Length: 66
Image (tube, rainbow, N blue to C red; front, side, top):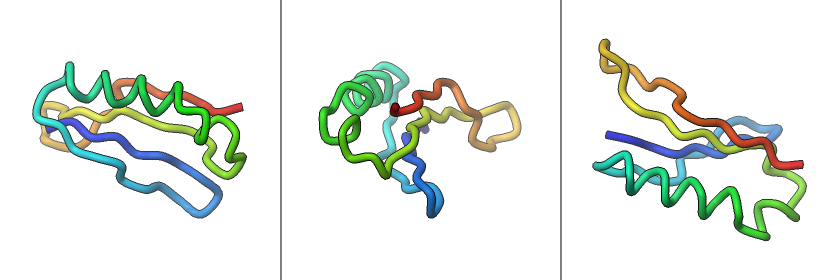
């Protein structure tokens, strides 16, 4: 299972879970390009997570909003 989280000053928020990496990457790219996230100012970043061999979430990609 793959997931996306956003991060702000208060912590992280789960955005969605996806069964395939391709689906997750498409959603991650859409969030990174979304004008609301870019202009909001409170959302600091987004991360794409995938499973590691121990079954724990592992960061595959990170994007910082300016």
